[in-house]
Image (cartoon, rainbow, N blue to C red):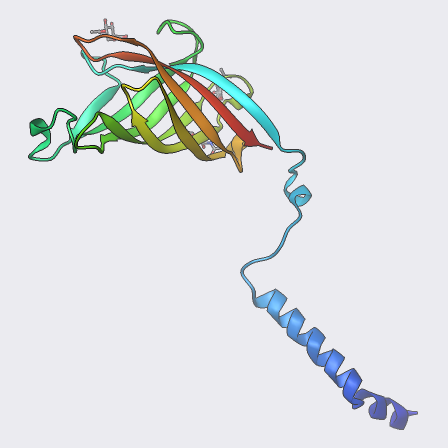
Length: 194
Ligand SMILES: *[C@@H]1O[C@H](CO)[C@@H](O)[C@H](O)[C@H]1NC(C)=O
Ligand SMILES: *[C@@H]1O[C@H](CO)[C@@H](O)[C@H](O)[C@H]1NC(C)=O
Ligand SMILES: *[C@@H]1O[C@H](CO)[C@@H](O)[C@H](O)[C@H]1NC(C)=O
């Protein structure tokens, strides 16, 4: 009987299968990546959410929420302030009034990225602090030509309830104080997430 066992172990087909499985097992245990089912992360059905809020870009006064942090030696020679980099921690509210309920902050920066028109590179996170999205964030990376009617910027990701987020934000200036530069911008955000 021992004889037949050892014979079958060395059968070429048996040996081939053994080799295949041991290679697969080794590949699995040494690998830094694996395939998961979305359900194993608790991800169920993808949904589409629309968020609307008002963004307050306050550049004037002692309580400014957007402050210039850098510029090029030549920035002032451009009408478009090419090279100007502004850091913001702008409040987001449910209504156009600054005193209406705060739902989060837009934290990040905008940089004048065009030599010929006022067009910003926007790199920011919407950090929500209200309702079910409290603690969740969305990340925006886009182009914002502030004098055109509706600007569209991609939502490139998110965290918390917005994990795996993708979508777009539409920005429309509602008010601009031409003396101070303070602005209220309506944001409509459409985002797929789980
Ligand atoms: C800045 O904020 C403080 C505290 O909220 C307030 O008392 C002050 O009036 C504000 N100043 C301006 C210029 O808005
Ligand atoms: C949002 O979450 C923080 C931290 O969990 C909590 O302190 C805060 O009260 C929450 N805000 C609202 C409006 O629920
Ligand atoms: C979202 O951003 C806040 C900062 O505003 C951070 O504390 C929090 O950890 C982020 N949420 C998640 C889920 O990563």
